[in-house]
Image 1 (cartoon, one colour):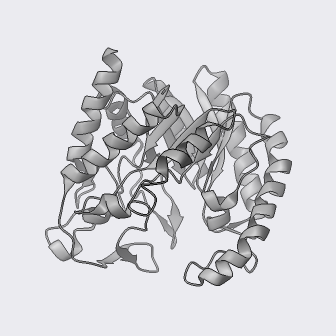
Image 2 (tube, helix red, strand yellow):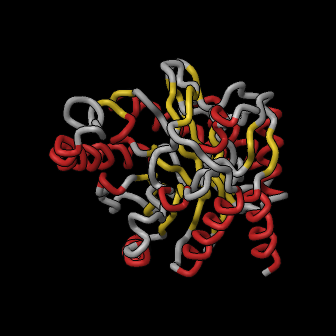
Image 3 (spheres, rainbow, N blue to C red):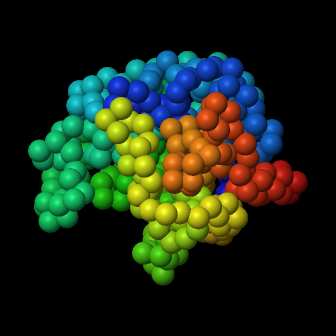
Length: 328
């Protein structure tokens, strides 16, 4: 495996806010230095829906020696708005690459789920499975048509490797891309038996394969439901409101899960693997167990009420993993 990396969220937009508030460039700089120097990551996947934040964080990542996977992750745009966002991102990523950074450009993330216009009627309704199944063929066709037009436009603006952080239902045509990439890298009880074959098929497509997102929450049993949504409800402002179940903290379980998956990806011939995620700043811990939203967080650090963080067991396990890689 060439790249051991982690996701770094600069702010997914929702409810008039983002998942990274407040956004302090000096905090971001320190976080990225920790990712490079303490976790020994080779790369970081910079995500988010605010263009200036993406560019700033990507530049700071390059400054500390990280390979940058520059990855817009937008929400609520239409297809025209998404195209404009991605082309602007390609130009910003190219400036960084020309300045000497190692940069991969990912042309968005899970666009059929978070963009208006790929699924008939707007966006997928996961509560209506029959309607969702019926909508998938049209969504797949729309995604393929979008990238057939977009990728040549991206290449006119960006000279490095190009990929896309997909979800399985999109059935992306990878012919225009340099890298096959998936946010569906979760192994849990629902797919554990088939996971080795699925991974082998993903790796065997003739292009480098990147697992751009995988991880699990911090409660006991989270590894068995790793690919499911986090057990928390959100208000209209995008803030966490309540946990949806009684949860017991199990940081060691989270740590085992992420390292086991990294070992699986190493053995399976994956090009790059990105743990999800460094910090879920929208899911802070609290002294009230019923509102300890960190239990539902996949972050490897525990975000405190004042916005600072403390390492979890997964952080320490990844630091050991990174040190072992660096010593080879």
